[in-house]
View 1 (cartoon, rainbow, N blue to C red):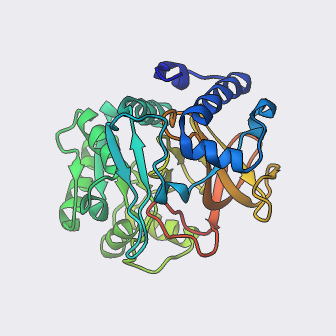
View 2: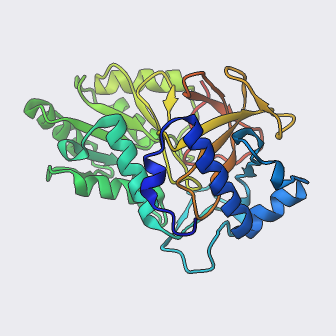
Length: 328
């Protein structure tokens, strides 16, 4: 398992194959990740009884703030860190094989949006560029490099140049995706107005303390009007994950085949709820082979029978993080 071929993860198909691979990864992580092993043992879990997906324990995401969640004693390829909030500790994800992350986001993007080389990729992520260790910046840098259009790149505070660029792209009919942090997209939409219905506007969430939090529906209405698009796309990702889910509108997210969502009872975190019940979101990310693939997040939401999910908010007293999506 230590040298598992990423292709096995990213070609997984069907619930039985997913479950089998998840159980193998659980066994590997229990034996090799000291923090996860102690957590599972302290729960009193008999690992001989972990025989299906729903019996695998989920590690609270807060452990990434204070512990080194790793299955390897070797130096990591890279350490991703969360944006956090002033005065709050940052999460750190020790990534021992960056190829898992690269293959994860490239394969997922292709699955949801097609060949990245056909797109112009524009990024409005000023707060992420101001710090080091952002997994989002790592991904967007690569997507920009894979684009065959020289105009692809970052825009900081020059919203006038961004507007001009978008107008030229509309005229040239080049497929375009604009990835932006929420507050920056709002700043643009409140100052400029476009009519570019073919544009994909993808918000990554996060006001970064720059603006007040608003409802997702209000946010998307403002952005739709400002950019002249019918819907707003969203990305659900975080420092502690190596995979992303995507929404193409209405806040309903879909996962790639190697990522699944379970909903837990807010009062009894060891109890899983059925579809369309509101609870805490547990994420299974098989790409997290060398850290922990089973994470209990601080997001509240619902799952649906087709495997999709939505985010409805966050637990009280939990940190406001860059990956957070707004309450519906």
